[in-house]
Amino acid sequence: SVAVSDPAATFTSTATIPANAKVVRWDVVYSEVFNNVPTLTIGWAESLSAIAGTSETDLTSTTADLNLENTSWHTSTRAVVCTLGGTPNQGACVVTVYYIETIQT
Image 1: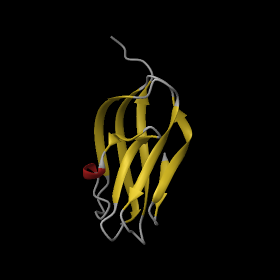
Image 2: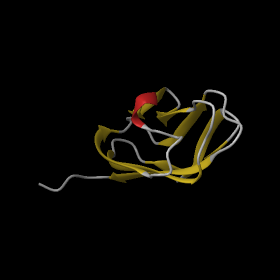
Image 3: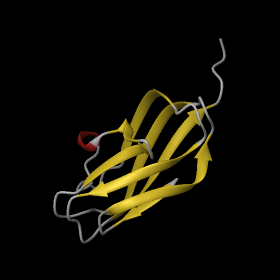
């Protein structure tokens, strides 16, 4: 999970996702809505919107964003990077990314 809050900045998880994992879900849960047309991307350092682009979240809503996903992770172990854009001067949320390391067939 990654805690994100104003002002606009890049926030990086302390935990990492292993190489070649499959991202299966991501959630954004708000403790305070953001103001001033904020944007959020979710990915890793070399691809900041690999999991979610700016149009996939509504940071001005009080409703959590819960999203099923099917995205291959980087070929190396990487931390999750969340980039808060725009000009918010209030707001806070937690982004959680769920993954699996192997797919059972």
